[in-house]
Amino acid sequence: MEADVWTIHERACERGEPSYVDPESGLIVLTELGLEARGACCGCGCRHCPYEHENVPADTRAGRIQRPAILHGRIDDDTGYDVLFWSGGKDSLLARRALARERPSRPLVLLTSFDASTRAVAHQEIGLDQIVRQADALKLPLIGVPLHAGQVYLDQIEQGLRLVPRPIRLVFGDLHLAEIRTWREQELGPLAERRGAQLHFPLWNIDYDVLLDDLEASGVRCVISAVPDPAEIGISVGQRFDRSLIDALPPGVDPFGETGEFHTLAQVWDTPAPLRAK
Image (cartoon, rainbow, N blue to C red):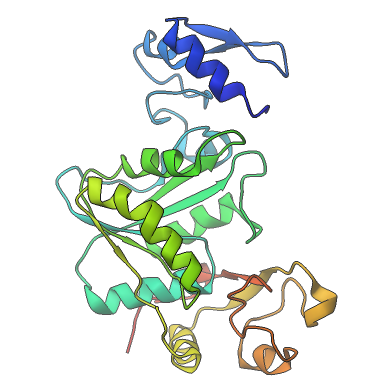
């Protein structure tokens, strides 16, 4: 999809037009205005659906949505939620466990952004179908935010957060990279403030040994999902992330892959109670 298709759509809407010609395929695409005139979601996963894809069948929604939508579970209008930015790996799992200890009764929503063309979480190489499977195993609602070329990331995240009527905290599983946290505070902080929410970093600067203890206590098997340079660090996709893998890493490699050396997938569906914390 060409990067300027969203600009084309915006200008068509400004002119009050119900459709435009896609510059890549030559096909006619209905604008948000054109789709609004229908009065309801048609269930086809239209690019500019103004109805949050509510009629797209649940079993095909992950592969079809083009705008932020609820992919699993339901979100109540009158309930306050923490919103955990969920990428599907060990850090996300550990953040979920930390939240369960902090406020065990606080409702939680998972929010996952993904590449709209590959249907996978960027860098993690985790398919959206696996993210939905995780949400199902954890029995938590999940919002999917597709990221298209040419769109502004923050705008898409804000659209996704509109699906949560009462967000309390936006939660991130960052461990120690100050520049990442600073970016979130500068860019996502104002967004959270507009919604009456706060940012929260439950794993910040916690010792790796403590995190490993908690990961082992969870009983969840985490495996390597992506390695940008496997030859350099000597691990490969599919290996289990555990102490033996960490011990075998070359000097200078972050034990948790925090600087992008590797990424993981938390196979929560194989564990009866992955959130039970001591």
